[in-house]
Image (tube, rainbow, N blue to C red; front, side, top):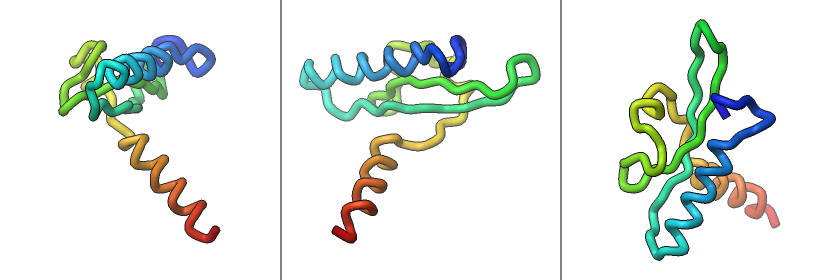
Length: 88
């Protein structure tokens, strides 16, 4: 997202593919992460990557470290789902 803008979120597509490949190989626990940063030269930027047991997979760890992670997206999705189904 950061390098190509919101119209071409290649990092997100790549990260979803990496997470899926790991799962298909029987490797569980890979987390899809999204982070943001603000720089004087580029303004607001976002980036997606995969982490497995705290290690960045398929991306440059130094580049990823320049972003502040938003949160664990799966945890957010589970919380949202639980809150929408609680009243059902």
